[in-house]
Length: 197
DNA sequence: TAAAGGATTTTCT
DNA sequence: GAAAATCCTTTAC
Picture 1 (cartoon, rainbow, N blue to C red):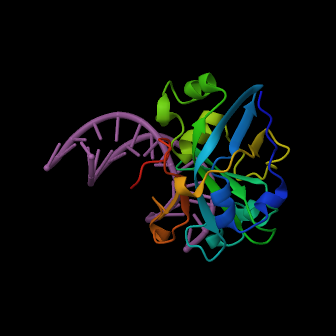
Picture 2: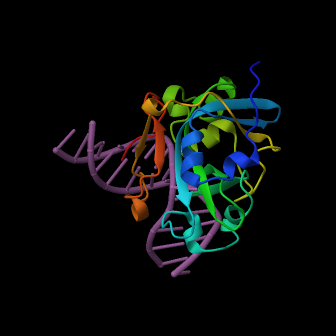
């Protein structure tokens, strides 16, 4: 089995845009009930602070956004549209609410479990979206918790960096409040990037 | 291929 | 009470 270093907190304690870029190629892993699933991150999105209209912290410090104000390297997991979960890595420093949403992964380990959780779907439909990959990896509540990405069963590990020529930045999708804020990073060659709108 | 509507619950106004 | 960092199905062109 390939050994990968779990990313240190210092990795996340930097500008959100940089972390979003460098998370491309990293491996996110989640073990539930002894079953380990993982995938290579191919799409991320940065949410930077209270002045970012699309960031949940734009609403200020509330019970929901408390995790965003905590230390970097924690996972901000939230429930959306009454159905789906989304996973973020908290960035910068405590008191500076910001995070990177993991938008798509290429499945690596635990294919059978991912297919089962995704209702028998396969191929890119397995994880080409933030709600899909969370479901495939088995990531669920409690609401907006702050599990450490170093010590919990949900981890992000280093991998080979994705070369610049294979990376593109595009405007955000699906967020009417900040469509002109180009903080969405994707691996151009990956078929798993989410659908453009 | 694109657009529209539904599912379903939390969150903040 | 309205909107939401989504996804899936159905309907229209």
